[in-house]
Length: 277
Image (tube, rainbow, N blue to C red; front, top):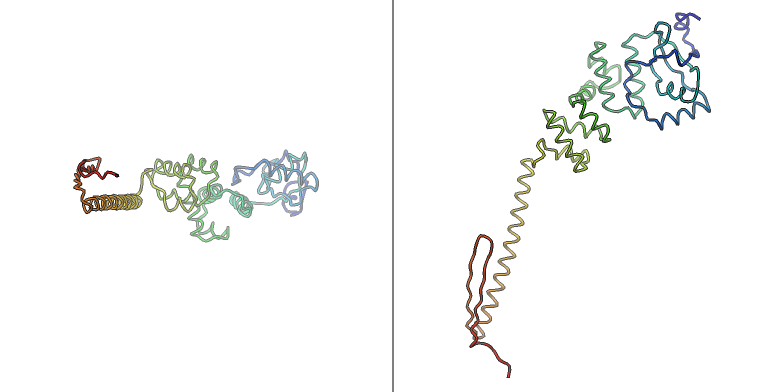
């Protein structure tokens, strides 16, 4: 059957997996092997329940949506897969692929941001148009795109570390790649939650001004507590000397202070020694 008839038919057709080429606008870059294995087992037992969507591409077909199903079908040993053939522009293909993946909650936030950027740059879609196509607010699209301010190398570290989108956003307050790297090191070293990262990250791995003030207050409090304890000891010491003097013992005291020590000396004359009968 000629391709133009297939495209006009709007029906489901079996197409050989070797004739289907990947969608260059596919936003998903990572496919979990365990999930594909599970889907492959389901397809082997029940077949492909939801057809793939493709468009004509010369003698072959370009995948619009359904790459997980295609990969799992190949793993399951299928030679053909059910497909709906659509007449779609490059822009439509990119939008459909992004829509399908956004509807799945496990699309990584960087992949989503990168796909959005592709829509804007390669297909001349404005942020307002992208928001309308995806059912998002314009501010949501803008905030997602801001994640791409994070350099690619740091994005990869965030991916491998399994950090959340909130963790990633906490790095956006820093203007240089070096500052972001240092802040990311803090997140990993201190095992920060997203909330802690939003509140406590610093750009130079040193204490912020607020943290320095807090530490200074804590040190002052500790010094005050220590000083109070010393004064308590001194009062107790002086009281003991007063008791001896009240008892007729001519005790003498000497106090000296150096950079490191308080030195207290008590002198009790042996002539005042109390002997038992």
